[in-house]
Image 1: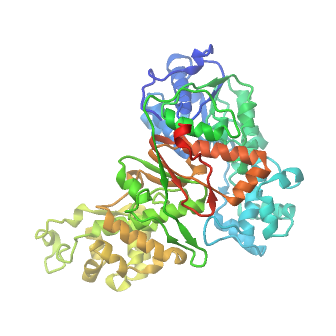
Image 2: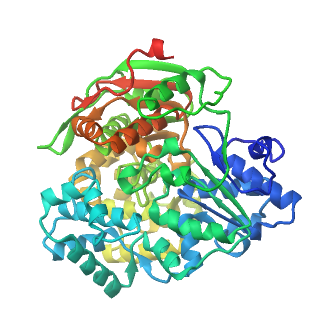
Image 3: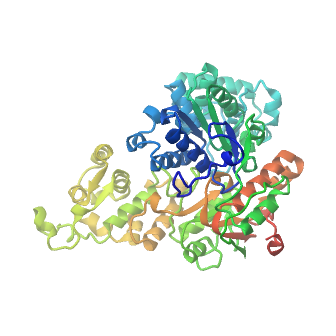
Length: 608
């Protein structure tokens, strides 16, 4: 969201002849401020009309956007600091993701299904679920992709037309010859026995029971991400509201494989208001993005931002993956012009690396790891933003330990607080987070500890309660050899217990850890990181100063585009999203993956 005041925000619907209290749907192309305009509408209604924040229900697709929206409303004094501190309660309890708001409406007590429970169900049926890499397919994973698609369509396997139309059904049949309706029924029984629910049931249950937020104002953001199930649920909620505000962009629908469609936005019985100016996308970037979109759609007519946008076109060095070794054997080094590390080093500000598939993105992640560059990514990949990320936790712990030799820790004879006076490094000033301390204690050689492994486990439980542990406390749990072996940064990595890392990822994690310790000056936390490596599909709503787009689609995607018009339309929308993410510079990488073919135009001078 842009950093503007409530009074500076434009209420575009009023410029189209609508009153602020009218229900409207904002059609917001990239960078035009869909969410900002919706938030300004709410802020104005609360400030200048007979409404309070307790009259508002606001649902969105992404947690990050829900948080941003709450922060924006707090900046505009629409909600208080106390409400921002705990938005799931009180007047703001119906402002959040669609699933969170629906869950609060229906007061669902069951816990959501964990991946291991899906795996357990499959294993009991003799089906493989887990795969060595997140992009690999298995019968179990494909079965649940079919289940999820049907649920998103608000139907069941008895609906054979939708079942056969599911884009994952053919892949499932090639891996498994079982009966989908029987498996669906068995999975329903399994969930009931475990008292768990699928994610989509947070939407289905309030739809079935009629539970609604029943607020006077309803805002639904990112409507281009909705499926039939969401659309059915939201339609009922709209009937209850005096004012309905919808924000979306039918040209940014990229999840057709999950059941999303532009038709849900296009068919809304609300006046459409096209937001007329992009405040992010330059004329150059817009020209390229809409040239791609025009292969299957009519681009919207909007003004671009006032700043010029640079486009750099590179012939990328190759990324090569060995299926035998399950590893990347070739990737561009940091000194190579256009490599991921070179881009990060060359330009200040935020960087977003985009590619079409998880496999390609993983190769980019590998190149960043080799250069010691922390990055964020989506859940299935290896970003430093992953919950419980062991590389990040060990990196930060070892960074904090650097320089604390046995003498610095007072292990050479002195006692009490006096033991630190001979050193300018006071361990009482350094704390490890509970995660950093737990993973460090698991990773070090047991002979360097003055407590047993079972006592380490007890300490870990206590750490969860306390949150942090100081180095002076850590000193009491360790021997002098600990401070000899684990206070030298990157060179300490070779002395770690390697089993702390997952077996298949062990070597790669060790390299990533060692390189990061050598390259970084201190601890790194997710909020410090402004480099992302992510698939295009996961990048909706994101933007960065520098966006690096790896051109190319696989032969399979190309064949599916030729065979199915809806697939072709979805693909060109996907690349439109990718090419409209940059604030300053767009970098196009050509030929990086040999199994892909060009989709971004090569005649850039003519296009721009």
